[in-house]
Length: 107
Image (cartoon, rainbow, N blue to C red):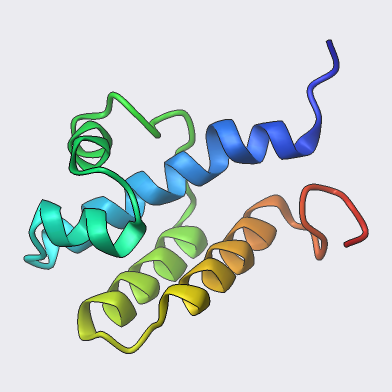
């Protein structure tokens, strides 16, 4: 079976981004419960991100870590909406993949 770009994004990139963001937020003093709410995931998912059981397949370079750190700062300060959070994930994902489109598609 052919692995399409969207599959890699859903299985690897998004969980890795969520794991990195969860770690950033917890390091800034945000509780795991609040992190789960901010990321719209279960608290158990946050626990798995922090323990390395989920979202550990990708190691980010410093540029991506900086973008994730800025996003964590915006979430922690309450200056980002849920809709904007999704947009920021897309920006980071595109930057990570070096692509202007989502999943290699033209949409």
